[in-house]
Length: 372
Image (cartoon, rainbow, N blue to C red):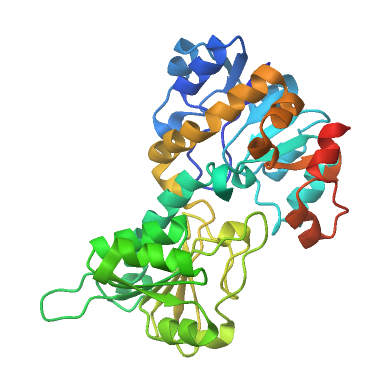
């Protein structure tokens, strides 16, 4: 199979779909791999390194999209990239379609087969291709929140760990999954007073066992959520419903009861955000203020630590890429039901139920798409 990776063009996105090491693995199995010139510079990988791994350097993205059977990316294709997709082509990347009707419509119109990293599953319902970026984003959320709390960023001027004689920051993490766990780890490590809210008693028990008295756990109902948020210096939104839009847990009205200069970090912004006042921002302009509350809503947080993120991502995406390249997309998905869960769009139809329901498409079940 001819596999291609273009340079990422989303604002301040420095990751790349394939590392030189991944290219070498694909080539060793008989595939041809095309890389757009400069695609790896954000992680310190030169064209020469890709060529040494057996890759073929192409001058622009059009060459990649025109000539390759499978496109491997990191972020969702931007409008100019979606216009280059064609019927029967395989797109393997993060998509986050539920809050993005324009992308969904254009992927449907393209006729391409789009497999989304974020809905590929693993044993026990885990999301293994989302997990490493959730780990990165969870840890980065505390770094970002700590910076946003500084006065020059219109924050409260609070140090997360405090100092002797001065109380540390009150950090509230909404959601006890991978993002929330990693955010809590970082906040606890910096010396913050940490509370984690979740609705799953088993998750709360696991978190309580892990953190013991270093972090408090609370069941997430409206009363507990309001009480925690109103006392918080920093709130991390870490709620995920796989493939669907995130629930709006903090309303505009609630901002008026929060401490002026408190910070909201919305890690769920890729899925539409879990705060009513959230809107996607970029690394170039990461924050804005609503009702005296600082919002940080960067939609590609892991892009700021591109090398760490790219290698962590390739560790989990490459095995499926190898399988698709070796077997073809349909045989690979039939062979592996967890990979099949990643199919979101195929031949002009939406195949992921939550996306179809959210955006009003007729749902083509994955099993039917594979049987056709």
